Image 1 (tube, rainbow, N blue to C red):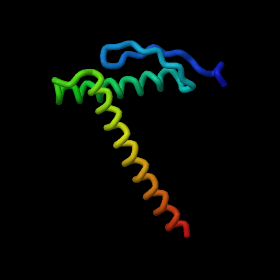
Image 2: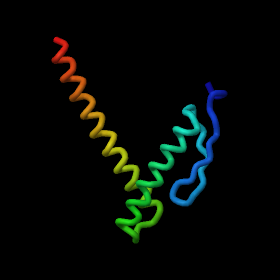
Image 3: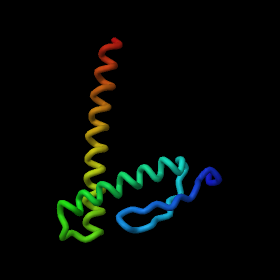
Length: 85
């Protein structure tokens, strides 16, 4: 599978990063743009924070969004199961 992985250079919060991933370069770049955007929003709201703190807050915010979406998905799957019964 390692041969399916492709290096993609992305820029997040002013820094270039090389990402090795199995997804398409377009997908990797899209995800990087979203992370960059979230970091910039947090930086605007809290201009005194350093890049490290902004990155941590971004990770926490993204994980929070993921948790909420997973809970929503579980609820929907439960409702679908009830409808099929």
